[in-house]
Amino acid sequence: MEYVVAWIVYALAGGGLTLVWFRITRHVRHSGWRDLLRGLAIVLIFTPWTPPGTTVYAPATLVLLMGLTFEGTDSSFASGVALLVSAFLMLVVLTIRQVRRSRPVR
Image (tube, rainbow, N blue to C red; front, side, top):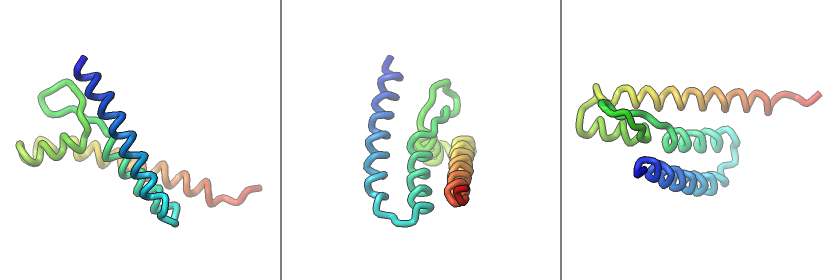
């Protein structure tokens, strides 16, 4: 039960942080840069991953940082790959969105 409560608290805190970040980046005039900054924040906050040797999920950013700090680069490699894949998928979505925006309306 504590695991579920911890994720609910983390999701609420991440949502609040995301809203604050959206307010901060509201003043970026170029929509591409604004969307990229917002997407990177969402990827860093909300990508889950399992720490080595466990069956529970944790934020991939925290797994990466804890792995680098305490266990070395080998154990944190998988969470880094998960963050890179999430960032790549975010870039694909933003690229498709930008292409759709730039098409002329018929």
